[in-house]
Length: 344
Image (cartoon, rainbow, N blue to C red):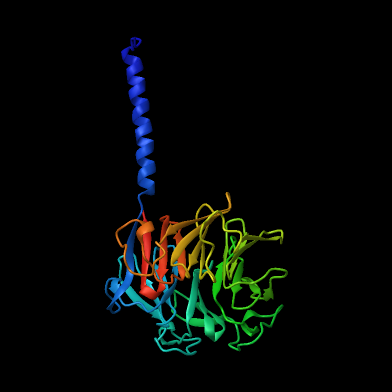
């Protein structure tokens, strides 16, 4: 026989069941993500809503504290601003490839293929002007653009120990600030990584670490470097370890694709990877050493908006970004000329 249950016991069991149901519901909701279009995908001009606007190979995304998004166009040679109201405007670049405009308004300047953007601790926007071999600095208050690093001479990197704007860079593919904001890291297209002291503006080469076209630093200043099919990490004590390569696949059936185009870091210090070759957004989990897929079905295309990340189609994505204030993931779906977001 079932023992008699008094009303207090029934009440406690009901509350416990309700609590477990609440946890299960919250867990399910947290995982019920969907993909939305943020900008691009059509041909509307500036001053209109970003959805349906024209973007030309967006490679980079950055955010300021006011919630504005900045988009760097590799092919379009522009930096665009998407405000919280959803309106898109051009804030830098004429759209013509070249080098011009230093010391003047950014809307009159010329770029040569933007690979990356990052907001500095000073509130200015730093731009990887890749084939001008320069890092450009856009003062977001005045709209004036200048050269922060690089001479524009395409040759082996030079200038260690001196001013960054007097040093030669080998191209600029990836930018990242350390956790304190005191040091800017630069990855180009060679075997080295450069660092710039933000106070003195002195540039140096990071010793004893192989370079790569994509870098990221977590909250503990572990430096992640993607090169070829290899993901490495350099810890603050200078030790370098290989995390992923052709044989170290993090438990995934599909190894990391060649030449990952961008790395991102989330609030838990997990490393996101734009696996351009496989049309996937992947995630390396340092706590377990696992490599998992967080978005993309592996087929190039445009399908999947409004659905779950696993059903999404992207085409050679070049940027993956985490916005700390919202917890949202943003993807520069470059060859589809659009920016996407993954949201609960």
